[in-house]
Image 1 (spheres, helix red, strand yellow):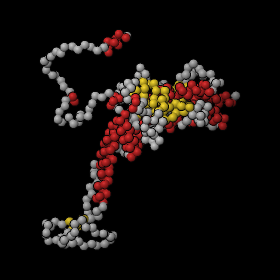
Image 2 (cartoon, one colour):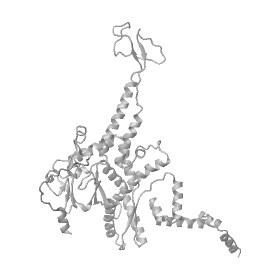
Image 3 (cartoon, one colour):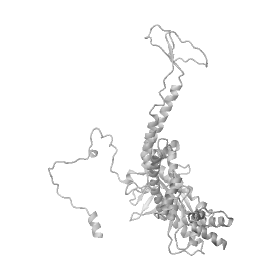
Image 4 (cartoon, helix red, strand yellow):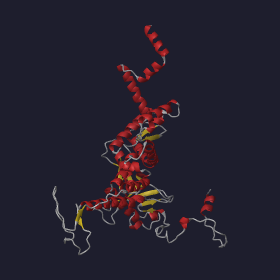
Length: 479
């Protein structure tokens, strides 16, 4: 095995240059540099992933992304939409061990702890930070003020505080505050005590080294070898700026045109037969009055031509292009489905929901499983009366996607259950619910309904569909 790896990475000896006079049978137009495309490809480079996303570049992108999110309602809505749809009201734990009582106790304890540490709001904040800052950090630390037997807490850290400092620039095993071992695994994170933009921050201040096992770092790795994230809105930042400038320009033009109630103009040549009027002079106007104008002059209103006829179409095109950076569509981003029918509206949602499902699997692997592992270890130490089974399998439930037509979805669900192409567990999982909890609650309701004498629809339908069963019940009563 190692011999094969050596052969792969072995540097071959340079071979003598050979010249073959063969005609070129194919070419890539995109690889050609001409006068027409030279300016377009002027900033293309071959930097590594970490050099391309250098600290200075990421700092600039973070500042501009935060500025745009703070001042552009579409950018703000996009960031909040991703957080609300991905995290929702928060993931819910389901244990899959063989001991049902143990499963119930662990699930209830984790739910109470998650509420005590405000896990769902913190996860939504991390999702927003990953979108506008490019990455999010959270430290697994002890907080004695937590109202739970497990004192584990999730402390969020902004990306600016994880910095390498000047003395680590020449370190080959560090990338802007993250130190790696010989195998490329994160070993520690250098966290500044204060934010660089805080008034208490002092240059060269000592930082805290947090071991990697207690740090959660999430970002979208767009290139192999990338160790720090760039904002997910990076490709759309120029479009946000264009949209705001265009809207402001349209508004300014409309306001400028509205400032002129009327104008005086004449067709007479200079020094012609018309009374002399001071240029750029203003005349106050009153309502319901008759006005005379100087001889040779006419009064007319200014045609504003704003907003332009293609203004709405331009906004839609820009928003559609912006939406692609978040793998969504115009209707979802703008909240405008006026141009959609039922089928196209569902298709828009399916494209977006698929990306949310993929993102949720990322959160389960990189965040939730690590949080649960740390919580469960401390939970077993705190609750000593609990005997942990050998199998500790678990899954996560998320909020379900609201269907456009709930009645059709319910009918389809009923059909799948009848023809045995699905299971109750699978259908409940789509709705973000635990099928065991559903069955137990349903059993309690049916028992209570029977005690109160409330007819159960399912039993009535079975009785009506089986006359023989009804007759046998009548005969049983007569006896």
